[in-house]
Image (cartoon, rainbow, N blue to C red; front, side, top):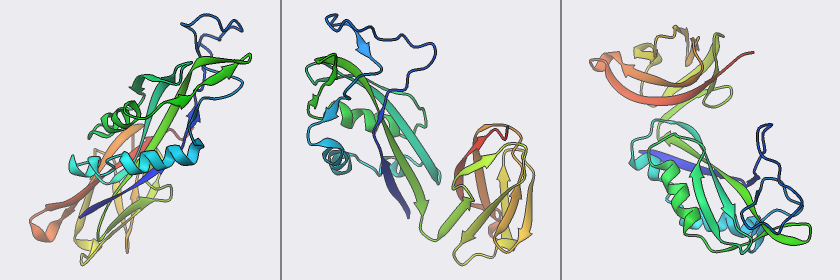
Amino acid sequence: MKTFFLGLALTTFCATASAQVAVPDTSDKSIVFTKVEVEAEFNGGFGAWRNYLVKNLKSDVPVKNGAPLGQYQVIVRFIVSKTGDISEVVAETLHGYGMEQEVIRIIKKGPSWTPAVQNGRPVNAYRRQPVTFVVQEDGIDIRSKDGFKLVARQKNIITVDIAKTDNEDLELTFGGAPIKFLGGNRYEITPTTEGKGLLEVYNLKKKRKRITNAIFEVVSGT
């Protein structure tokens, strides 16, 4: 049976070099600020916001939709208007398995916020909400030293523990990446490209039956 955990935080909108800088004049109702003197806040503060998310978010959505084992950070951006209303709720990630849609749903249906303040006036401002889903499975433990993260074109060590199964009976695949069994529960894997990669685990003694799979994020080593 698959299980799941949630990680929650709230961040400000991070402006990039190409982002438009908000001007001091706050009288224009169309301006949406990326940086403000006082951030918009959920009524009751972050603790109340976290409680709202935990209580209302259907955190088993990725499990019900068949997500592989792994850690998925969903990021949703939204606007808190000068009246505290929520609008333009959009996902910045695309993990799928219903995760982005669920976070968008719960933010849209939430109550009003206390608006951001700039130059002593309430203003429209961006907020971002990361939600981390961790999908695990009873009797199965797969991980690298950084959880579900690998480094491209480098030798990475992962461990695979499956209840009542000898690792010598397992076969692992990760796209076309070389994988070497090091003995015990340890494997050496060298991903060739960055991005998401699917690790698949088969039992050779059961006609190469696939036991499970897991998503890893492969990052650049430079």
